[in-house]
Length: 158
Length: 296
Image (cartoon, rainbow over all chains, first blue to last red; front, side):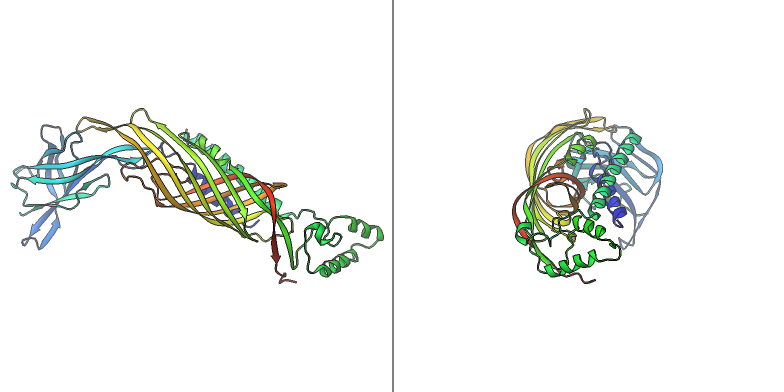
């Protein structure tokens, strides 16, 4: 008889776990955004520190603005799910000259969960950019998924 | 809707809790068994090594202070006393026990997209060891109308052993409190006839499908449960399981929603529970040795 509370607790746990309807709730993000963070490059790369740009403006070419003159140390945005390439306009400060980022990638549909459905994940092939304000670009992770990874680091010297 | 589901969960759990309590209570009450001293060992299917000990106890009982009058003594003699085991070897009924997991039908209410049928069987291999096998079928069908639809079906089997931890109080007792391990294998086919991915920023609506795919999965199960003989050879039992996936064989980008016998195709491990009604067909007898009671 002394085992009854333990048995009931075990049953409770098992029932909740076993009877969960996974198709009812979406508990994961469907946003498979590429992440870019900003670093200040000093002493020819010997010291890299995260940096915040005061007035960041970001948009895809010929599309609506995603971020408009906001202070940011990183940005997240979606790659075009209909084509294997897209271009973004990035202006880091009102006084700075804007740069253009060009992404080439392969797309693949990914089943996120029974409750969420599908998202488009991508694998970066090439990333090109102009170097008006940007000093260097580094690809940290080529897989663009829904786990909020910072795929690219942009380095600046100022 | 959430409140209704919570209420139903609570009701479901309460029923199981009450059932478990009733079963355990039943276990604690010793069922009347004919006095082994009055029957020959061959007739009872019982070999009592220390018959003299039993006789001595019976004699002691009838001359106890409570039984003062001769009338009382006769009444005590007529009543069948439980055959307590001190140190003996006896033969216990064994055979193949076949059952149906009725929790799979209840699961249809909570997870309406899946239909499962599970049949279990076990055989007694030794005093405390049972060989267990389980087989079943699953069909999964899910349609969200907006994001994706899914169709799948398959079969599975598990094989393993159970160890009975319960110390028997009577020679006829068949109840068991068991733990065990299983190896499971499933083969299922699934397809995604359509899916849609929306992207508001790019104003894109990507549509596609995933072709019919057949996979084979392997997993290990750790089992713990209780099985009680509710009527002669008819057993009721519940069990909890922890299932650990070894290899699902599915593409990471398109896993199945349900793997037959395992459950969610997107999880590496998971809990499950069963409630089984089973019937034992007695086929043979197993020799059971009970060590001497240390208290005495």
